[in-house]
Image (cartoon, rainbow, N blue to C red; front, side, top):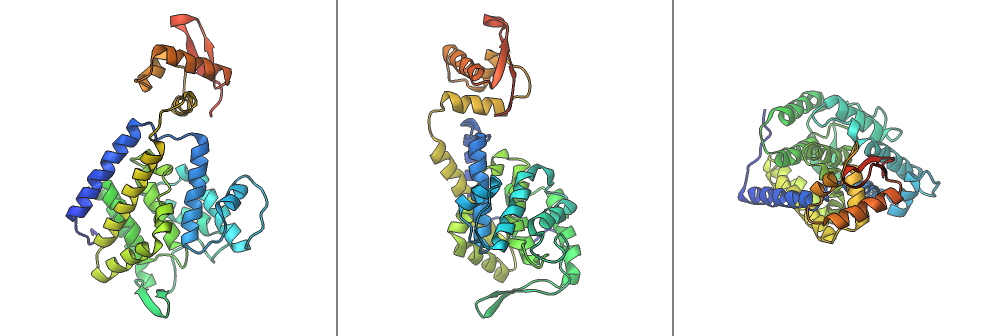
Length: 320
């Protein structure tokens, strides 16, 4: 059964704006950032998603943990970060349309933090804000059926993927399938759903903006609860995604350096190539610039070369 929501004019405008920005991201070669930027984005994502849940570790502390260094901090907070890094470091192993993969991700994310991670709850829960019960989750007996139905919608619905990702995020939060970790799973799984079609979402830490506008996040969840449909939350999340893409484009509106071009090209190349192949990717550079870039790539031992002049071929030595 399709979850209840409406497609408003605001939703359509946001989908159009996001689609345009994704096209611009691809045109500016921002969909495959350098390894250093990938690392920074991963740290921001983990920091922001866990900060929403009350984690106190800083980005510097998370960086240290990623580099296998010891830090001083609350044991629970450290374990939360290590678990999250384990998930995000192996993000490719999770499949957004598979419920088993969803449970496996929760098991890793919440290992050592709750009893029986990766297993749906076996008791009733309510979400308390202050002294009030904000939301009564569906009875635990209904959780397996509701989650199977939600994954069926995700797999089979012909709805626009951007909208489906928001619907899944909200509906999962509403069902509240686990005793803990539902919020971070909702944000993680929305990223995974989007990554399947748009690679940029692997490197776009929109959780940073959710963390920045955290009150609005909870208001959108609460507003959708009261309306009995996810429309308000869809509008909120699409707005966050649109804003995050806008910030990415604003930050990256710059002339690419030779190193930027080389890192990008190496990240998308698996076999040998020629200068023409290089220029087919960077259509706005001259042949002289391409030759200088490739010479630097050889000097940096990114790739080796065989042959001379027009018969020169390059082959990768190592990944950047």
